[in-house]
Image (cartoon, rainbow, N blue to C red):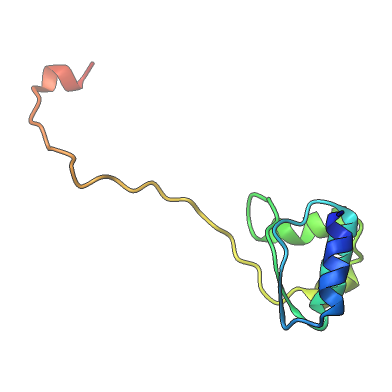
Length: 99
């Protein structure tokens, strides 16, 4: 089973929402953009920020017109480091802190 054939099979069922794990090649991007004209398609693109998602799709060979029609929302995910509550404050001498 090839990914793009599976996606075409899902589209024949006419779902309201389609979740594509990752868009990484032209055929998947083409099918996802065309499906986004009639369905809600959610997917991941691995870019550094949200605006690069548009250029990534265009670089894959999708025409800018289709990208503009198919995109409703782009969200960028930022991973934030959370500090543990178990951190203990220590009062160290300044001599040690300057080294």
